[in-house]
Image (cartoon, rainbow, N blue to C red; front, side):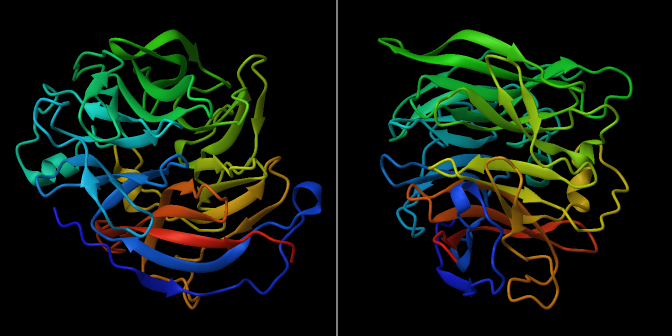
Length: 387
């Protein structure tokens, strides 16, 4: 895999209109500049305050994904999960830093779950791709790639498979959460039944382990969950789901869930839009997420990964209560300086440790075929002061 990192300025734009008021009278941040920092087929990303490194999932030439780390300027790229014997050598991704900077949690496709993956294309279209997670388990690797440990143990099953996606650590590193395909497929449930798991992340002489695993299924539908972030005090979770009765899988919302009380709050409440990948800013004032709000999308099919042929999203920001919100990027808007010339999906993002920017995964797809032409990581620098 090439490890080139090209710093290409996409836009230098300060929004002209005043942003809406947020917490304590603050204004919602606006975009100062967008710069490409990595172009070699990345996927999800996370940014560590302890060591100032970005972990990301990247595609390899064999059609599988691996976990990489790099500096915020896109240099110093290292692969952590490609060594034989360290972990399964299939799809590895969805990296999440432990706040100490010593470990990275990730999802790994079971070594024996490669049926039908004899070609590069078949591997790239596998349901085990990070973010889909079928027949995957939760793992953790040391930040230098020297050792890895398996944390969950779901066996490979092609009829009623289980799987995991998007682990997230609490800010003190004592808890970890993830979303999981439960291995249950009721009739009419498009993507099967899902659950959220929260566990203690324990360290002993044998390495990292999970303890006191708790299963959560908030809301009235359990057709999909994706975990995104713990609140700073660890009491609440941000996740995306379609919890409301009859809410389609293409209309998932961002929810805040209070773990102890079970209080559930819909922060976006836009059942006609796809809302996902939400993350609190380091100070807890803002939530950045991706959304298809305002975009007219005709999903001809949503089963499996077919929705990828139609989805288009941009980066949005709201105050922590979900009352005020603004669109940050306009990659899908013709005539705008951000426009990339076709259908674009903004997906996972991560805040910089200083809260003044985000590293964002951007996938640019061909309108006619739906096939992704290229993906990249961009740095979205923000004006976070009063306006």
